[in-house]
Length: 257
Image (cartoon, rainbow, N blue to C red; front, top):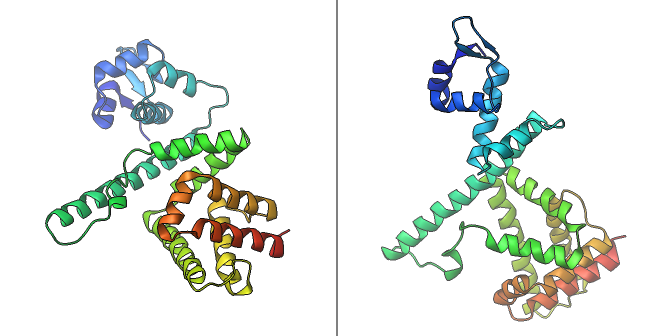
């Protein structure tokens, strides 16, 4: 990176000269040096700091909050950039989902296809996710929060194609288990063990670790207790919530330690 005057940095970044002067005055972004002619000069460290300021402004932080974050003794620039990337990737995925929702709605209005009600609201702000996280914290306490954050980070790092494949894999496993239930196969029988084993592997991929017996049984209990999970499973087939969770618990007792 080169050295830039305030006017050159303004042109490069899109931030006005007046704003850069203000950042200097409040100590948020000071130049690397000031020449005898009074010109402010900015180097690579200042350019990176300005980038951080713009990222944090994008996420709604005040200038005072940004200053506290950037000047903290433990501030980690690579870690901060990775965090920004995860947030933006998650938002990009949400926006792509909104675009798909728009496309499906337009196609339905044009009579080209039918649209299920469950597809009408995909991609909108994740109030459901927030409510789900509150439920987990209430149910399992503060110990759930690190798992929640780690899970969000993993999903945020997935590409759209990877995330789509992840959900497609779950759909195939649940459909196989629903067929087994319809055929009257016992939930704790060997005939459904393969499908449950694939479900367990799918959970392990999402968690980035294999759930042991206790963790998989706790997950089964959560599926049974949480109204959103129960609603989704019962919409697939009446009684599927109990069938799936019984199959998970039987598998945990039989094959996990």
